[in-house]
Length: 203
Image (cartoon, helix red, strand yellow):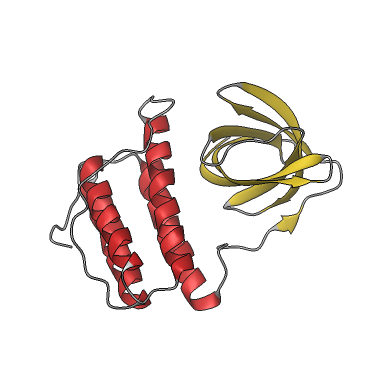
């Protein structure tokens, strides 16, 4: 990183795009590079949500040239980028927290071949929640959960990288609300299994 702080979202994307481009041209596990590219796409969606843009699109940049020597070097450079974004103190906490978790997830994948930071625990039988997104709401069944994400069954499919609100009641009877990104969606019998990544939680 040439700068110790990043304060503009466009600059963050420029560095990240350069890193993704360099990773594609290096001897790096393509799964790591795909994960990094997905992080970039989700950042755009998250930033759009946090700044009131319902459909921010895929912001184009002129990638900052980078060189990646190894998978460890890729992880190191991404960690420096995350540190510079946090040091700039210009981004919403939800965004820098997401970046921090994304770096941890890449590190965990590199060393453990696992994408999840924490294993999912099966939900108690019959647990339901309310899912809300830009076009509507639905009752869903909770299948599994962790501090970082939730797996649900829904009657309809949702596109990846959508921002949704997930409302449920915990075991103590308290209402919980989480803002999440849809990470994947696949058919599951007569329903759809949707993976949600939590980026904000509220009581």
